[in-house]
Image (cartoon, rainbow, N blue to C red; front, side, top):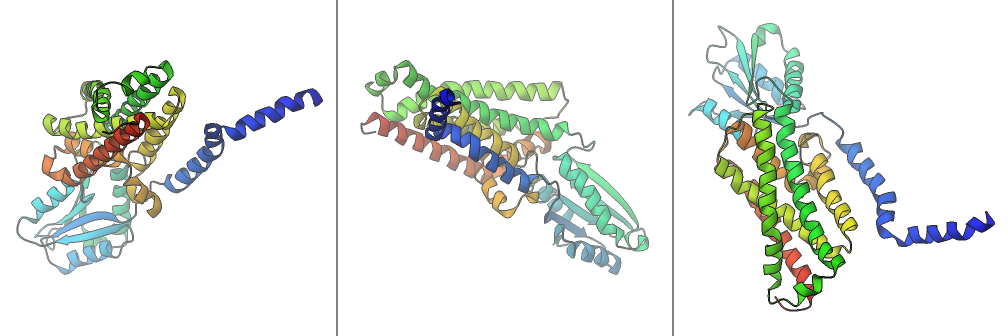
Length: 360
């Protein structure tokens, strides 16, 4: 032990001075416990739902009252005219509600409640079937009558309809950030970064030049995954390729810009790769709605989910691929991704320019 003491002390000193090792040893376990402690839950809170009451009877009022008093559902009763069913279907397609109730006009003579559920996320849809049964169990069978449950966009509730689009999102941002995170650090380690610094190109031109080639690579990756999903898993594609390409470009630029920014603040390819994985994979897996429904997250984590670009693109991808939703349904998500892309690209350019030591 006397002979080993010096080596042991030296290793402790190296560990204490190595911020990356300390990050892995201390921050990672705390981060994982915090995330999983709050996020591992498939329980849904305040599920957005709508109701179309064409009966306007005492029986229908009792059903609506049961849902309004439920701690699970946040029910919006739509006006009986004009076209309330079309309005409910549009809300379902836009992702603003998870289900709607339809109480037909002849409900008093032939009581049959219709429940239409969004099946684009099979986990949520299966949970909603159970929640509806729980609410309706408190009512008398005579008041409810028969119940007809329909699942839109994924009637067989196949889990592949949920996970494959989610994997597209995770892989796309992870690959995009990884590819470009190694860009500047590779130049720095090879000693060729100084050649870029003294080149006549402006900083933003260098950043764009390093980003554009990877846009093509990322698009190829996305196309490969979607083709495999379509012809191997049989997942339908119901939307517009042009709309998907437009939003995919925003998302890819976001991932590439994040990688470029990481490469400007790290000193080695190993640290750049670790930072890219930490910034993309874990938040996108846990806080985007891919595995755990956003409604099940604690308020603090739900607030963090709005800072994860994958949250917005996952909703867009599921909406376009499974629902055939148009461009107009995703203006808010598109605006958020544009803000992410432009902010990260600007930060990367400014950071690179500061290292370069010359004006833009």
